[in-house]
Length: 235
Image (cartoon, rainbow, N blue to C red; front, side):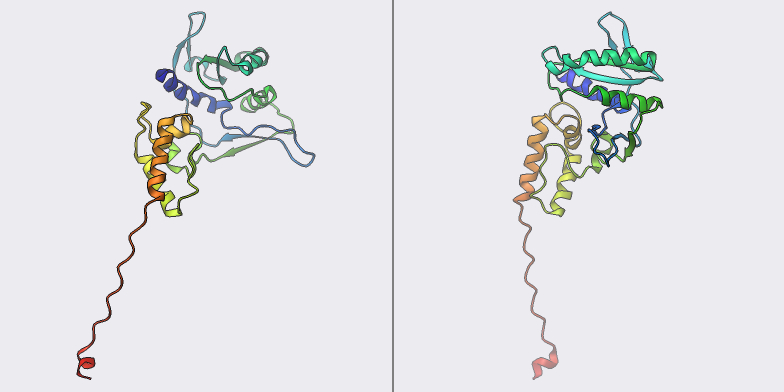
């Protein structure tokens, strides 16, 4: 399970090429333009080497020049099965310009995605027309990439609301200085970003917050009375 989770963390970066960092395309009000969003300066996805069901090797390098959509799914997941026909249709429609990879995992699923959203992002990344949809980019401040975890002011599942601004800065510093003991080799902040279900990093960050929240800074010593001058003593 731990090996699967670590592989999942590495491969999640591949989604950043296409559709991890998007805002859903809602049913647009009359005066509002639908929007998709991408990270402005994404990290390059790490290469990997997997074996497909047909025994052939699957590598990231072998898909160079294509948009890659990496989909984590499980046989017990109803929404996962429901979206397979849409993914197959997308693959057939964009053929060798798109590579959809399905990775079977045994834990967690974030829900069914809209195939229209998938296609809009794929077309945007391929430089194809996307109609009245606006494309925005945003600066990652720790929500997406591990390298920017130290810039995050909020972390998944971490409640900093009870801390003072000074305590919050101290807590974030500790989150980026301490390594999570779950075996991921990440800092606590990085682990919260890439595995918000990790109970070890959640407990560790909660402990740090509790310690800071209950810490009372020492009261300053009362100022000493001013010494009397010789002239005052003579009086």
